[in-house]
Image 1: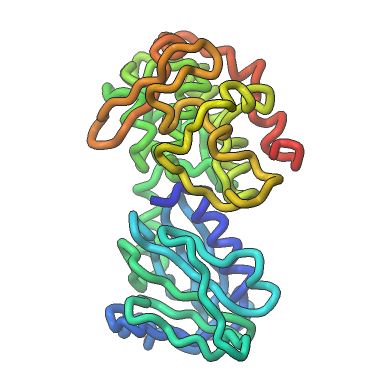
Image 2: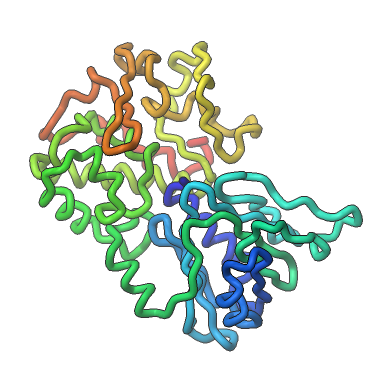
Length: 335
C-alpha cells in the first residue's frame, strides 16, 4: 500500500496535469459510471492529499470552489497511470503496478484504448490518467470530505497538521507505539516502512505502551518524521539512513526480498539496499551495533527492529538530535 508521501506526490501530479481545467471523465469498467457521468465536463479545481486519501475537487466553472469531490483510497492494489504532453512526463505511474501507459504506434496518447479494469479515466487537453484497482472511489460533498478528515490523525506533510494532537493521541493509549504509529487515526500517512525506521531512529522499543512515553520523546518522533516524509514526497523514494551510514555492510546482498521504489534504475538515487536501517533486513547485522535485525508479527503486520539499539523505553531519545534527517532530507545532496 502506498505510504502518505506517495499520495501527496499524486495530488501534485494531478494539479499539474489537470488543475483548474475542464476534464472528461469516464468509467470503462463501469463501476464508477454514475460518478463519472455526474462530473463529466466539470473543472478539476484542485487535488489534495490527507494521509493515504486523495480528494479531487470539482466545480462547474473555473476559479471557483469545488462543490463535489472524488474520494480515492488506493489500498493495496490501486494505481494511477499517466500519458500525455511534457507536463505529464514528471510521472508515469503511481501505485501498485508502477507501469506507465504505452502510447500508440503513431506516438499519440489520445488514441490509447483504456483497459477493461480502468475504474476511472480522466482526460484533459494535454493528457490522461487511468485509475485501476482502488480500495475506494466515490463522489462526496464537502461535509463528507470533512468527516473523513476528522477521523484522521495529523498528516506530517500538510500545513494544517497539529503535532500536539499527535502527542495527545499517543499518550492517551495503552497500545504499543509500534501499533499506534500504524493507526491512521493517530498519524495519517505512516506505513510499515516509516513505522519501522522511525522507531529505530528514535532508539525506541516498539512494544512500549504509548501512555508510558514522555512528551519530549513523542515530539522528537514527529520532528524526525516530517523531514523523512518530505524527502519521500520530493524524490518518490523512502530513505531513512544518514548519509554516513549507507555504505556500512554494503557488501551484503540485501535484495533477497525486493523493496521496489521509484528511481531504482537511476544511478544518482540512494540504492534501496542502503536506504533502510531495519525494514526487510531481518537476519542482517545492524548497521550501527552488529546485532541481528529481528522481525515479528504485530497486529497482523510485520515489525522489524534491532534488539540492541532499540532498548530504550520512556526516556527522550537524543540520537536524532545529533543525526537529524533535516540536515539532508531537503537538499539534493541527501540523495
